[in-house]
Amino acid sequence: MPHVELRGAEVDGLRLHYVTDGRGPAVVLVHGLGGFAQSWRHNIPALARVATVFALDLPGFGLSSKPPARYGLVDSARALHGFLHAMGLDRVAIVGHSLGGAIGLTYALTHPARVERIALLGALVPGSSYRPSVPYRVAATPLLGELLALCGCAPVYRAAISRCFHTPVAAEIDFLVREGYAARTSPEAKAAYLATLRDVRRDVLDHASDYRRALATLEVPVLLIHGQQDGVVAADHSREAAEVLPRASVRWIDACGHFPQIEHAEIVNGWLTEFLVGRPAPR
Image (cartoon, rainbow, N blue to C red; front, top):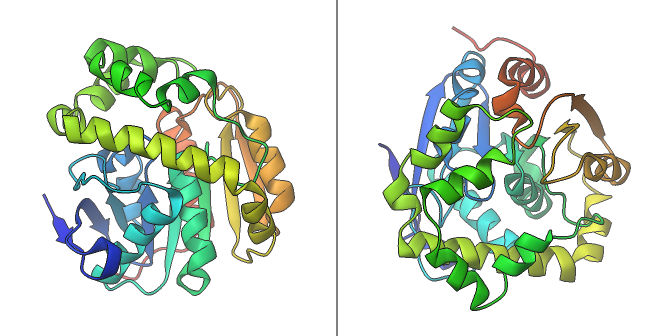
């Protein structure tokens, strides 16, 4: 499996795992909290028909490095920048799911010349009225989070992921739980997960007004795709975000929870292809 080791400043020595396929304009897929590159497996082949697709494991997740470090939005955006530089990618389109949407937007704000457009799927948009749920706040609490992490096991993960779907599909949930299970549930992975919860919570709560002002100046086209029955990031979140982002449009999917790219992959793949590329790759 391909990995790249980043060089320079805060990301020096960070090892990121990724998958890539296709030929054409560069599209980078950024997973959400607890996700990993292969959670895009229903989308990579479709997008690879018209683009060069890169899906990476963010620091702290999947098969990437999990160092004791900060895991805030700026930290993840910095790692994303290091990855794009290592891949020789000057300008890209970004697709972000859930937390990956917040990271993609943070990257676009800090490197606007390098982002052509952004698609957000069930995404957390910092600067909105979003507030972490009670389970999120409990898990982010020092000591409580560590105690809960000790209880983490496959049945617990399966139950948590099932609640993210409008209609759970056993095969999909089993894949999301079992793929790379050892690496994704190691002590280092659990520590990185808790650090991400805590750092992102601070970003969302403490810098909301800063993000809101900055996002109002973002000039790249943004497509928001949201499940009407999303129980993790409510649909109203995307409605609010669309009012802040100057060049945003929203597409809704009924009978859909927090994973539109899995629950309605064919529809989402069509929308993404049209928005991100809109033309076949040269052959």
